[in-house]
Length: 108
Image 1 (cartoon, one colour):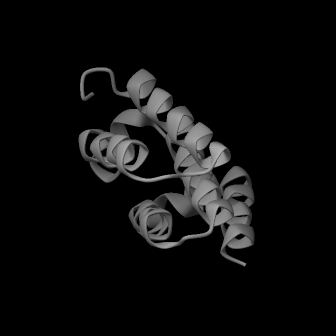
Image 2 (image 1 turned 90 degrees about the vertical axis):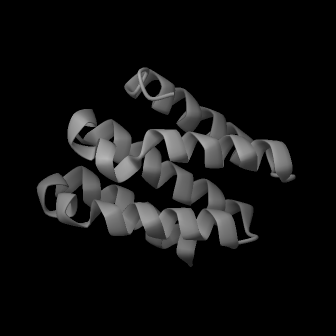
């Protein structure tokens, strides 16, 4: 169910980017809570995909305060190092880490 909700959020962001911009902090916080707390790998992967879509879709400078790339990078690398994740979650983690590095080279 959560996976489908995250997929709907991604679809909605594609259509209504301007309306979503007011809720980016809540979206990011919700995705991180699900990623850290949910044992289901499908939910973890979907939560990471939402974060990827947020970084890809919005102005990097404007959302830097929300994304907090330094903190996010540390959390993602700790997740890779300390937990046993499925291959698809590891792939999503590496994709998000690469995107953070490309988008915020000064911060990471």
